[in-house]
Length: 320
Image (cartoon, rainbow, N blue to C red):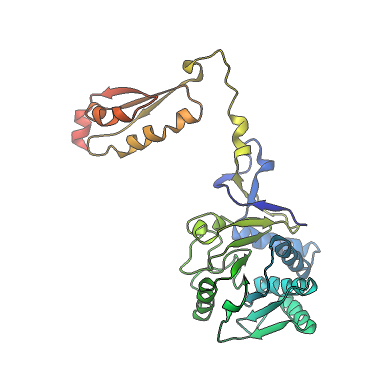
């Protein structure tokens, strides 16, 4: 079974090597890195057809299937994953129907589409009506991570129909319509589960991603990044940076931090800083808040652990 990685973490733009435990961090691949990594793997001798079936098998093993299943396909390799998935569902005795928005295919996609028709799997091409309400699971194989720009009208109608139905929705690689690099979309599939392939993309975490993915996992199909990946930082990756506190110690043992900011007209930044007090939560022993004296009465009721240092800065306040 492919290695699955849960996707409930924080995305950073740090390159590997910045933190100590980089080997444990989860890879985040840009769309371009993913595209070139896929091409390099094929050039090294692994057929694209084999990678397509690996992706399909990873999806198959990641879902608790509720038949009947609808697999909705576009025209690229993401659709090919769907055709290969249909074969696996058929072998498992799970009822499925393939809906093809277009009557065109990628080379590897055509191979698995033909296999589906040979097996007698129902394939509905260039459909006009979308009866997804009769299915318990709908698989989104319309658009892959390379999509950018505007969704075509015919695909928009299909995406709307998927979102409107009550079925359990699975997006393969990424939600169709969502930009793989920035997580933005004018319209996209809203999934119950998104199964990323090879590595999560920035678009699985940024901007609209959390609003349109109830859950996400990643499956490994044997493609290694050609370029250094971004990393996803988890709690375990930073735990070692926090030292053990000695019992025989005091707050002065662990250092002093100063928060300096605020003005009569703009007090928001220092208010947020002392309320969050991330420095103390991160291990500082003492946090001192230096701010204009005119803000003391507003700030003092909210200070729990910090020390206030009023500043005389009327000239600066008047200037700004």
